[in-house]
Length: 365
Ligand code: GDP
Image 1: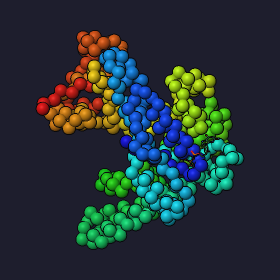
Image 2 (image 1 turned 180 degrees about the vertical axis):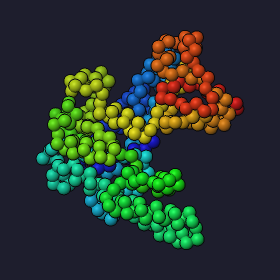
Image 3 (image 1 turned 60 degrees about the horizontal axis):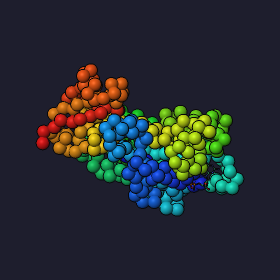
Image 4 (image 1 turned 30 degrees about the vertical axis):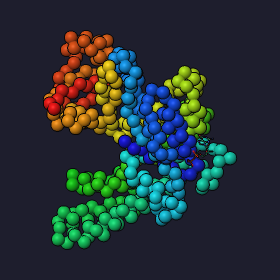
């Protein structure tokens, strides 16, 4: 899973990205790495793993991860090739979802590219670049499809969709709010990999003072919230600078620091969790003496496909899954107790795996 951090220059993208990767790199239990300077792998915080680690007497804990990409350089005119604009847009095309950082903090020492703090204007500037880039993709597709549409009914139908979609974007809309008329249209829509179709979370970057009441006194945050509500997107309020400071602390110091600020978890933890649910993801768990591990699946995944995440043999030879929910296991204290109480279930091919299921797969080799 890959998330791209976008936003205008000087809004706090790199600060946020650095604190994300730093927080990861310094957490001793987790195997992290930085793939390249702009890509960082971050663990999805999950307290259940530590608890299971103790229960199964293993120190090897493997969390689910998300990749974050710092996509700098998106400016007005990017879609027209300003700066290295087109290259940055291409980077966004590779991510599963977008974290759009919006500057809601005043600081006269840090220049705003457009001269003033105006979150809605900034959002629209970025959106417009994404829309232009998508229109270009659609135009290319239209040219290709037009050629075959004369002798091909399906292509003719797709052409109608493409034209309608292009018109929709030209009115300043995002593809994610476009309504496909049937399943076939929906499949096409998904296949274009449009930037404005990708799910987005807004990160409103505020000062430390605005953090405690979640940006309630910040008119910029209110603007972002109103916009996001209209677009059915999530907003989360963060202070990138504080996150960077928090990322430098060890776990105990961090807890105290957050308590002082009146917070229960860091903004990054919130962001990572929000991204996970935004993407419709959940974790099932495997636990044993060798390791405790979280596996990422999308909501609605059935047992054999979930098994396939571990190994394709597990999916091919799937017989059934032995499952206990994390909560049931905790309530019973041990696996044996859970079994005696009938809470360890045998599930078949049609079972939809749930978040926090602890799973043991039975399969034929
Ligand atoms: P980017 O261009 O969007 O990647 O922005 P940077 O992360 O490089 O940040 C630009 C400047 O703003 C840096 O000097 C940061 O230290 C500063 N900055 C980032 N976040 C905050 C914040 O929450 N509050 C304040 N006052 N400054 C910030």
